[in-house]
Structure formats: C-alpha cells, structure tokens
Image 1: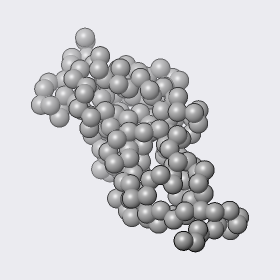
Image 2: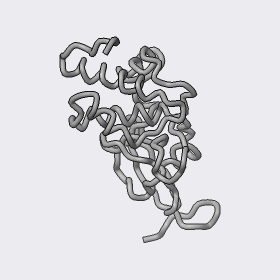
Image 3: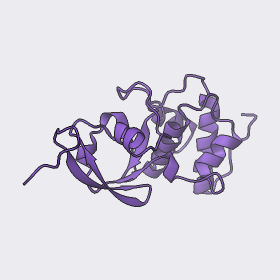
Length: 174
C-alpha cells in the first residue's frame, strides 16, 4: 500500500474524521497532534494550546463524547472518530446550556481556558459521575484557570447538572 506524501515529501496518512458534525478527509503526518491539526490545519482556533504537555486542560475536546487533552493525542490514531470542539457545541445565537451558564455565572475572566473548561464540563456531565459540587470540583481538577474563576465555573456546571437532574439550583448565599 502506498503511503500518501505531503508537499514536504514526508509520509502522511489519510484520515476520515467527523469534526463538529462534518465528515472531513485530512492528510496528517504521524507526529501531528489533534490539537495542531485542529488549530493549524483546520483553523478551529477555539481549542487553545496552553502547556502542550497535558497538564492544564486548555486543549480539552470531546472524542466520541469523552473529554481528552488534544495536545497528547496523535491525530493518526483517530481515523473514524467523532470530534467535538467548542465550535461544535453551540453558536452565539444558540448556545449550549454550559456556554450559557458560563456567561450567566461570569465563569471566565481572561477566557483562555474557557473552551477547554466547557468541553471538559460537557464530558463530565456525560460521564454521570458528578452528583454535587465536591465531585464537580474534583472531576474538573485537570482544567486549570490562571485567573481563579473556579467558584464561578463550579456554579455554572452545577446549574446545568441540576437542571438536567431536575433538582433546584443551589442558593447563591451558600
């Protein structure tokens, strides 16, 4: 089987990825991370490059519904995967409930970590392990916020989690 080659003459692999609901065929070098593919090749710059070592969570996206640090995942391993970035969750006119809650709770300051925080929160809710604030804080601990908006982030996630469970939201006075 012949290996496709990019303009650089170095070997590439052809992948089919479902990115934000759109099937795309891409050519990638074996060392290309999902983060670099998204940002540099596909111009989906909502996913941020923070530490580039899997320690900050700024690059969190959903792969087949599960949250993952895209800086640690080689794109070549994802043939056929469904990838959701912050751009695929909602639009300004039709925001995902977590996007809306982040705005309503002022759960960001500089905003750099926000796309990764929101994607991680979507994954956290999908996992179904968080039953309250302590679990939210623990399960979101892989996403760092240099500005320290953790209380507001937890408030936003807790609101959406409570709404999905049909339970009343915590009072702000607590």
